[in-house]
Amino acid sequence: MRRSAAGRSWWFLRPGDWLLLGLGLFAILALGRYVADGAGDRVVILRDGQLYQEASLRINRQFAVPGPLGETLVEIRAGRVRVKADPSPRQVCVRQGWLGPGEAALCLPNRVSVQRGRARYDSLNY
Amino acid sequence: MTASTIRLAVDREDRRIAALAAAAVGLTLVEAAIPLPIPGIKPGLANIVTLVVLVRYGWRMAAWVSLLRVVAGALLLGSFLTPAFVLSLAGAVASLAVLAALRGLHPIILGPVGLSVLAAFAHVGAQLAVVDLWLMPGISLIALAPLFLAAAWLTGLVNGLVAARLLTEDRDSGGPA
Image 1 (cartoon, rainbow over the protein chains, first blue to last red):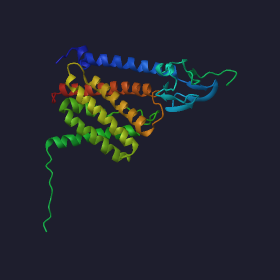
Image 2: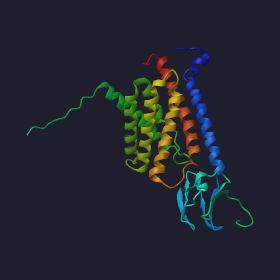
Image 3: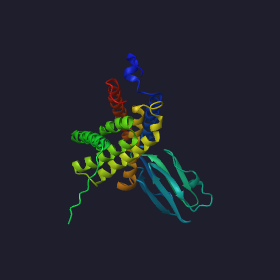
Image 4: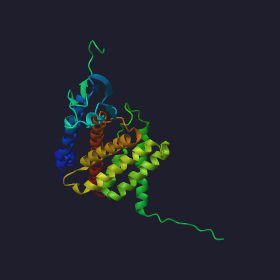
């Protein structure tokens, strides 16, 4: 076996080990960044322009929001939010999929909107 | 009436498994006595034993040692059949599955460190899955995942280095390689 002075203490770190350690660290940092981006984000659901429900992204749940055409189903899961089902004919808000930070989905003509907004202190809600 | 005696033949391998599992249980107990800042993050010292056994004696023995360690450790700590035990078992089973799948890559591509880190990721991943599906459904664990994975990365690296060191010492002292 290898017995050189440098090799002796490090021979057991194979190329795959280095690769794995690097990839693992990268994945953890990426995931940490993704989580930090969404940290403190709130979901605001409006019906007819009025506040229907405000919710945290940290708890998985679904809201059935009644509108003129029927129920719009809003799903919060794993720190993300989307419109899961909607009775509107064009399905624009459903096809939008998971919302990014700051994005909003409008379900027309069912008059429901879902917004993923950052929780901020301002003069109105502080 | 004749008393029937059931004798179990104990061979060398059984004794070896028992001794190694005892060492792993010892490390589990030592670890339980160390106060740690965040519940759920542990160094996983017993996995050093699992790794050394895996490399020296093969996967089957590593599985024996690991699962005996989980059960005996839980009995000694009083957590047998509690959620903590289920988490521990899920982690051990997932690690063993990953090690079974990857042991062919050792030692050409992966050394003990790579095996250790992957097993640690599998351990934490399985535990998060159990918590998410069974213990706390509804709570989004994604925010905690980076923390636990980072801990697994670090402890996997350290345990892997220790295991590698122990394995080289065996080799140098002329023990079985």
